[in-house]
Amino acid sequence: MDIFPTIIMIFGGAGDLTWRKLMPSLFDLYRDGRMPHRFAIIAVDRVPMRDVALHKHFLDGVKRFSRNGKAKGTDWNDFARHVTYQQGDFKDPATYSNLKTRCTHLDQEWKVKAGHIFHLATPPVMIGVIPRMLAGAGLNRNRVRDRIVVEKPIGHDLDSARELNRVLTVSFHESQIFRIDHYLGKETVQNILAFRFANPLFEPIWNRRYVDYVTITVAEEVGVGHRGGYYDHAGALRDMVQNHLMQLLCLVAMEPMVSFNADEIRNKKVDVLHALRPIPRGAVQQCAVRGQYGRGKLHGKKMRGYRQEGDVSTHSPTETFAALKLFVDNWRWQGVPFYLRTGKRLSCQFSEVAIQFRTVPHRSFPAESSRDWHPSRLVLSIQPEEGIVLGFQAKYPGPKMLLRPVEMRFGYQESFAVPSPDAYETLLWDVMNNDPTLFMRADQVEAAWQILMPVLEVWANTRPRHFPNYAAGSWGPKAADELVARDGHEWRPIA
Ligand code: BG6
Image (cartoon, rainbow, N blue to C red; front, side):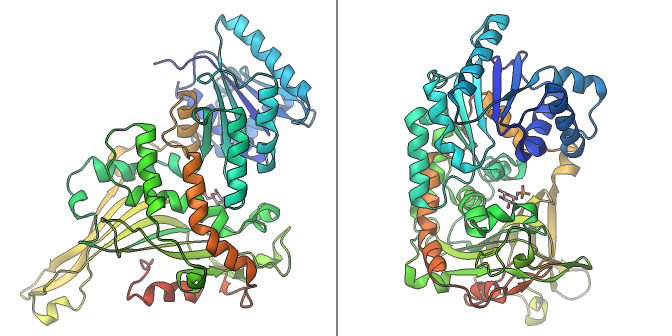
């Protein structure tokens, strides 16, 4: 089915996100024949640039980051014909009237009123400016054809998120707003819904009767790189937990949706956030752990500490690691702890959800058979492994009844033998198709902030005297292990 003719206007068109993610993804969609028959991409930014230079810059990004590897000359040239540059200050009304004129010309050429996508690949502060300016130029009026895309972070805390949502909804209707959390575009993240609700097998045991606890880990080897300026004002809780980890939690804990309707799914997710037990300020110490990496070694290479990174204060109190213990207060999950952790410069890179099932109610096997006994565990691997692993007990071959843990595996690559699209491909395609299922609604963003506010406030008011408290290339602060060990639990050990 052909997508309606669309003009994509990228604010921050000369910036890093456009170069690294948006253009390679749009090009991959084009190569796969998934762009509309009629489309135009206008990169909008302040720096003067000619189309030729813009194309060269984008081609460089495509070569580095495209899923399809190197761009073939003809494909790229065909695609590049759709891409132009518009120089303009985001605060200047002339920028918007120029865009409007270009849209009108395209409409005349295409003999149709095209859809408009305004993608804000800009610093968050521009959310306060661009929507208002678009509205001033009348580029917000069609509730179906005019759409705006904003990137996380949506706010710095609950109040600022509310204010941004307010500002956005003054100019655009909620149905026109697409808030990106790129985790939702990942195949393996979407597969959580498929796995849970397209199979009758696990849903009956997906509850407090059978599940002992759940761990959600997003571990990164990377440090803050060139993003120190942004990160030092954000930290792991804002940068990762408020969005990516909360989204994973929602998908794992939500009730079955009645239909695959965007608002139905988003309602079920927001129910989880509303059911999260508030963390009293006095309990932050027991429920949350923060860490910051110091110098260390990763894969044999010396790594600098966070405070030695560019644009980071030498006494920075910002956390590069965060772990939380949360409870979902509803019938399904009462009493089941959900442990979340994320960190930078950890010893290996992986994201996963591990569902730890309860042990059997009675051990009828001889004592020697169960020395190596592990309760069943289901691991939903998000990256770099993409698949699902079920760990359970099996009889070890031999005359005796000895039990050993074994694994049953599903891997995306082996099963489907097609490459997974980049999350941005999925999300950009969904925006063009006006499908908001994988995007964050205002109430969801605010509910996620609300639950984290006591932790953010306590951490802001008490300087961490023990930072840095984990070495680059390690498994994070000891206190994160203690957080789960106090309940007799563990993070899934990684080889
Ligand atoms: C971004 C964060 O949202 O997600 C980064 O701002 C983080 O700090 C990145 O590195 C992780 O994304 P992915 O897809 O590489 O897991």
